[in-house]
Image 1 (cartoon, helix red, strand yellow):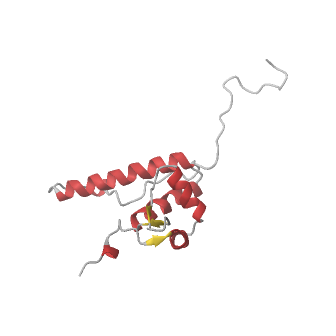
Image 2 (cartoon, one colour):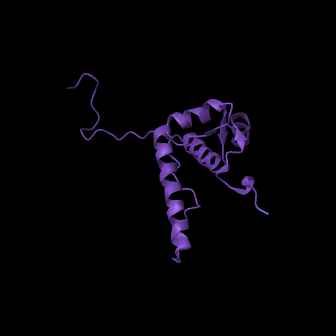
Image 3 (cartoon, one colour):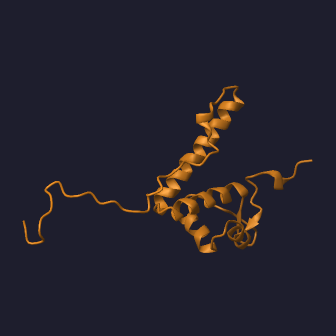
Length: 132
């Protein structure tokens, strides 16, 4: 017996419960709505309701932010990962095959030093502050 709660797109979670589940604040979830990543459903009373799918996207954005990526870049990357996952599922539904390298369920690895800015030496060598 399947219920709507089995559906990953069913808006089952209130904002407070959703934030607790993925370890963020309600303000963070609102910011993802403002950024255009997720648009929660609204209850009859106007309260935001989130699905498991939306929470997976939000958790992935949080992970990228923790690695030092800007919000807009993280949202864009998560959107593209999600679209790729949908495309891969569709390929399989149509009878195609995917290789292990095509696994869209594996998060895209980011460079470990992404949060550390690296500055390159000047091609003109060491110059004093008074030099032109």
